[in-house]
Length: 144
Image (tube, rainbow, N blue to C red; front, top):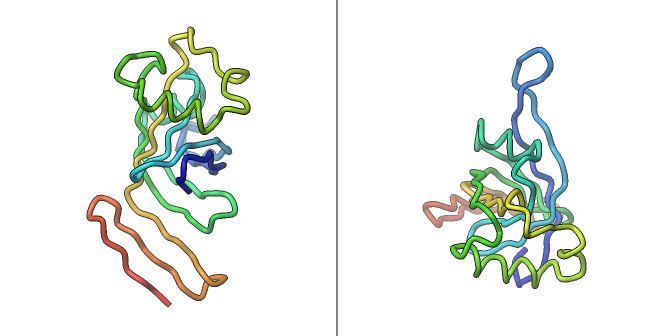
């Protein structure tokens, strides 16, 4: 993750099923990672954003990275809001191959989702070594 590239992640949220009971939902999103958070350009009216507005607790797994964990989802608002200019530039660079085709920035429904990681696990050596990371405390514990 990181290094200015995009990362396909599976993002899990909790929504209400047809029976009114909480149900997990998962989908792949393309995220840019920086300083303990993934950033995703998305629609404010998408199912994931509606679910996050009701319950911001999320889980994620980075594809082919052996990196998974939990976080808090936050709608940072319209991509063209001046407060988002630095993130917008980074998202456009990371997603250069498809960003303009997939996003209508003039639509105020086009927003940035921040997934602020709270805890994560990194696996190395095909599972022989695991690191549990507490992102807010900035600590890691190795497990074998």
